[in-house]
Length: 263
Image (tube, one colour):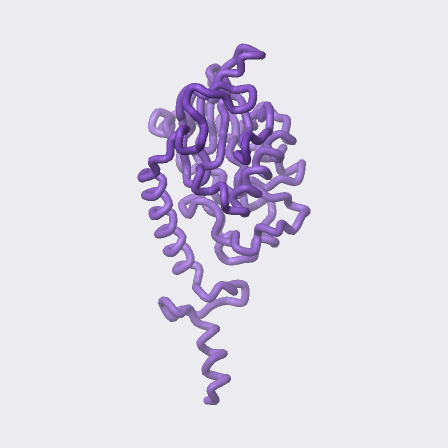
């Protein structure tokens, strides 16, 4: 066998485990090794997020000051990219949730682009099962957007209480499906549908949120080149691991359904 033939043969097998790669796997690893790498990266991101000590003061926002029209009151959620605060909107006399990028992400062009896209996509979707965005803005280079305050927590915190409640679970899944179906009808693919991204308002209405990884179905996004493994590995659709992001369809929201989790 020539050196060229040997090199080509090496490309057809996963360098980690030696399994043969199919034609759609162009990232050099098989689906199993890609998923293992993603899980490892996810754990690393969680550990990094838990170790973050960035405060409002570190973000250049004194705790008693305002961001746009909003007075920040307390932090209520934090992820690997963004942080959400309970805030008071004085002119309308209401509490809202206000999301901002973590300081460590401000200098990352992709993170800023995804944040803006998340706000724009959520603001464009008007459906009872999608968390509404009120305002999108920027202050001193820090992008933010305000949205309805989900005072009822998320589905991840309610799963244990839903075990065995089949009618309630079915109604919940139907509501989520209608919201996601509406997004699909308007050309938006969520790509990160999971229990922690389903939230509840004070009346118990469930809504889909966190469109930070969403993409337009009809548009070949410039951010999809490195997005094959974007999403949460435990809920990611198989085709997001084995195919190009440009070939994803609305069916990708079916595989990571929350149904098996709460049934």
